[in-house]
Image 1 (cartoon, one colour):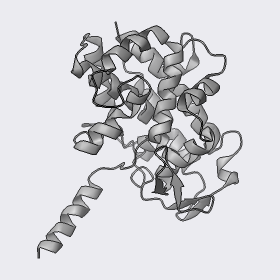
Image 2 (cartoon, helix red, strand yellow):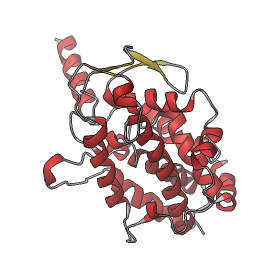
Image 3 (cartoon, one colour):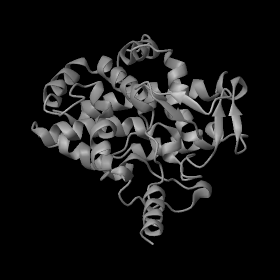
Length: 277
């Protein structure tokens, strides 16, 4: 009987969180942070000092993965912060303890001027959450953000992560890791961020920042949700193999991943520059 009860408990635990996979994986999150660092170098250096209080990932670029690689691995307390299950078809969405609320709360901590450990954790969360916000499948409630949509990636059932681990492929993890790893080709996230940023030197005046309102991340989330439907899920059936026809080309998956990483970095620079004093 205890085995049956244990099986039920495990089932509840594994279905209680809509988006289990880690958005962008370790490399993708660090690329977003690296882009922001290049756009607000002085602010990033100041935050770097505060982030030194973290147990690990205690610098601006690596702190992008602190919520996954430390907080989440320790407790799973804040799992629902990593996503917003936006519905298709314009149905009403109730956030609860979703990403939008978490981002707003941690930005408020940064704006309050805290320089202690709580301030460091808030900075790490904001860096991380802006990355999550731009992974399209973290803004989709469809098939648990693609976690229940089975695919292979170039004929393989696993792909390597930033940490060098072979991870099982489903549509969500293909966007978290497989596509990012193919884009990066093993390069350091800082080098990839510099390459993606190109000759952009400031977030100011960039079209990515609009609309100009107090909670622009709500609109940004809707944009990511639209990409989940128009690109990530587009024309795929469960069990499909993701290959060049889906991955390469203008507006295809790899192109969208690169643009989303760039957009996330630009918007992260904007939010931190506006709120960190």
